Length: 323
Image 1 (cartoon, one colour):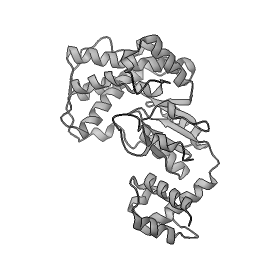
Image 2 (tube, one colour):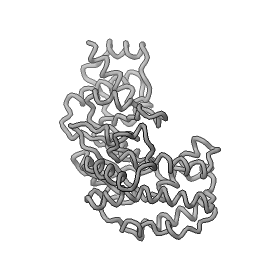
Image 3 (cartoon, one colour):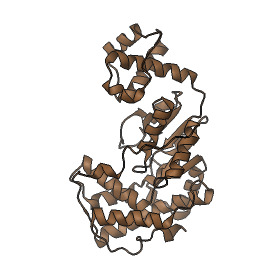
Image 4 (cartoon, one colour):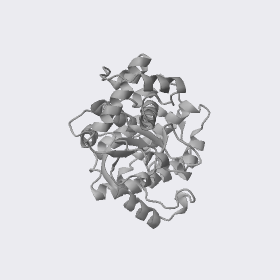
């Protein structure tokens, strides 16, 4: 086996197992690549024996060489269903999605490959909490949107699982300073300036330019649009698998959000900031007009289950802001 084979094995292994192979594993693979691998199912890799895992790496290596489909980059806004989309695509195409992180940021979110390095790796499907700037010429960019009110609340509850001492006041301040909407903006100075330092006209121009690079979007709450997005990537009809939905919070101790006048006003500002990209996406035809009543119903269900008190008027009907 030559050096290129060793490199592709290490990439495949890390994409599948979420860690780098050690020298012994690499040596074993290079000396024992089977001519007729029998492992076809990549979804059960972690339960496989080492031999079958190596068989799978070889099988995926072969699939990469034969891949003729569309290549895409999923700009994954947190808590929008990106993980479910990734798993669905992996199972439909029998190829793992390469998870990326933005290595230019001071704070590293998640795991995976550095986005700057990934541009040198010809991998069909990539996704991560990374900016639209990382799209390559041979890729289609896609993304998923969610009612900002519910997305922000869900993101807080998700964050609390990693940091039980995180208060909603601390969280919402961080969201205001560093909103995820900037991932969809074409923003040359993203690593120097703050998004909230830009005026509304500047933000609109950057979001309009960034969203122009997207090929397709979907709503989290709309199963039909999610399935259409998956079909766009996979080339055939598939049904989205919900692997990381609200059910994850059942039975997990998460603090109820206690809305105060101060944090509710900041929450409102965060929602309005995200509304800016949603309105542009609807105007561009990337997102369809949602069922406003359904979105309000979903939000109200969250309010009942995950908050202590809520008396907001201006964000209770967020839909009015972008109709």
